[in-house]
Image (cartoon, rainbow, N blue to C red; front, side, top):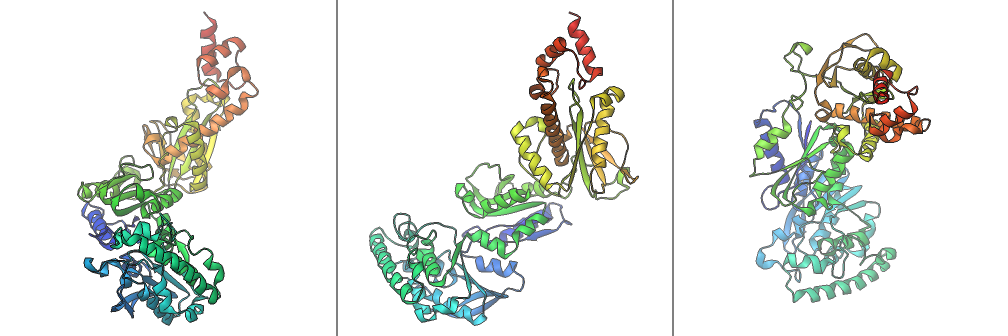
Amino acid sequence: MILLVPDKFKGTYSATEIAGMIENAIRETGNTSEEVLQVPLADGGEGSMEVVLQSVPGAREEWVDSKDALMRDIYVPLVVAGDTVFIEMARCVGLMMLDKSERSPMNTTTYGLGMMMMAALEFNPRRIIVGIGGSATNDGGRGMVEAVGLENLHLFDNIEVQVACDVKNPLLGPNGATAVFAPQKGATEEMLPVLEKRMEEWCVTAGEWLRSAGYGPRAEDFATIPGGGAAGGVGAGLYAFFGATLQSGWRLFADLVSLDEKIKRSRMVITGEGRLDASSLSGKLVSGLATLCSQYHRRLYVVCGQNRLGSDPSICDVVTLLGGFKEKISEWCRTSYRDGYLPSAEGDLFGGVGTYGVIAGCDEAGRGPLAGPVYAAAVVLPEGFYHPLLKDSKQMTAAQRDLMRGIIEKEAVAWCVASCSAAEIDEMNILQASITAMQRALDGLETKLDLVLVDGNRFRKYVDPSGSEIPYKCIVKGDDKVPEISAASILAKTYRDEYMTKIAADYPMYGWERNMGYPTEEHREAIKQHGLCEHHRRSFSVKIHESDTSH
């Protein structure tokens, strides 16, 4: 499944429109059969209500009386979904509802939001979610409280009130509501000190009101609560007078649509944002998705209007709408994304069946050393598994391999590590020992396989413990092409290195903890001085030993 989770492109396209454009591009470029799931997301500002209506099963619009930011009568929608009511503040006291000539936080009020809070009670909610982006106000929520009335605050005592809020600004000061956000709402430089003084006075009054209503403890945090300055101080007003929790907007909406579960079911995620820049990775939807995709090991791609970010390891690729959009979508979302290394579905291997089922990757470590076993691993990864470090183990540092080993062992559907000893290598030769170790690892997988992908160009018929012959394909440099083989190379390498470090304590003269048994100058010199031990491959080492001692 391909999961589409775009945000709006402010001023141009809604999140729903962007999701539709991406899916159309996917279908037009040839991927017509794979499931594509659209989950447009929002952060609580304009367009959030539309997202809730589309993404939450059973959600419906209900229209209620309210007032705009200039106290004019309006009829506006809210959304009811089961026992949850969603209010988009921008729909009642939003900046976009005013003409440019009307925009001035000196004159606007949140009274209409308070009317919507009271209207929400008609639907007997257990939870009220308020998206507070896009407001035209800077009154600290005073108008909202006046509309509800102190005598009615108790009606919200048993209702969970959540606020979609993506900023951490407090109510007052140089980082507060007035200084940071009022200019965006039409405030001039001359207005700012007047508005700040009003907010300071409101803090005093709010404390008196809260104590008189029995909510005195909340008054202590009114001016300092992180996020309290959001929407001209509505964050603080909802926290103090309604006991609301201020939450990341994208995270709140993600929970509302069960986004984590949808990401787990996908093989890749595509998001969208009007302008991609450094702020996109600081608490916005893109950063949230990057975190989730990293947690669930899925690929993340971004479609945007403008890209000012460059590259980032948490994002696989970025395209702008005017920068080869359809070509990139075709590259990202092709149905046969494994075609580069899987056998043809039309070939004899699968009798024309176009699916491969459960795929195991196999690789070995330690074919070249003079001492120690050859190790092999077999790994089955979840469909769509991705990690930016997952590649050929030889291209990784020891610390990176150790990190990926833990992730692979935790996340793999199945994995197993096996070995062939030095004595077995001498008996059957290194090629056959390597293949034997890989087949032992395959035998240890606790899952039925449909296909085995092997690094290199040599393998032999594999029959699983139940007696079934499992098709295989050899892939030269597969450890740098195929995720399952890359994972197997990491496990084989780390387990062998761990073993060589362990036995090095008994044979410190060979320096195995440094050379892992490979024919380094140090190791050759140690063999010349001390001879061979039980862990040496005599079919390898005797020749080296004789060559060194013949001079």
